[in-house]
Amino acid sequence: MPELEARGAKIAGVVVDSVETNAELARAAGLTFPILSDPELRMIDAYGLRHVAGHDGKDIALSASVLIDGDGIVRWTSITRNVRLRPDAADVLAAIDALGAARP
Image 1 (cartoon, rainbow, N blue to C red):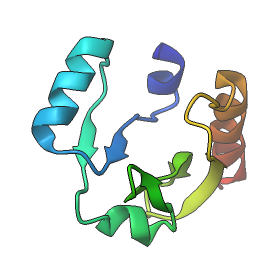
Image 2 (tube, rainbow, N blue to C red):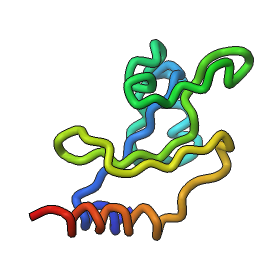
Image 3 (cartoon, helix red, strand yellow):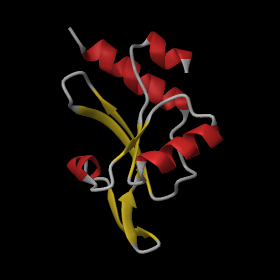
Image 4 (cartoon, helix red, strand yellow):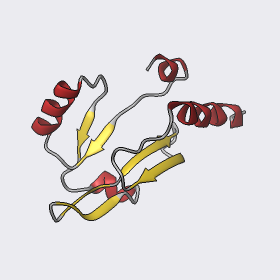
């Protein structure tokens, strides 16, 4: 998404699946951003995004979009239990722009 790159933002996905599964899914979906593997849910737990017994009785990540600044501070989140619901691109871009405006 050129609008993100123009703002210095990057996209990455984090899921509990294996690296191999992620690579296969990314290829099949034509994703151009990395999908990181977190099978032990360390990063998922660090951001409070664990969905207990969410899929086939296994813990997974909640469907979330998170903006993290260069200092590692969470500045904006959109969390849903419905994987088909994602924030509107305009909302994400507005949140990024607000972060930029807030910086001295």
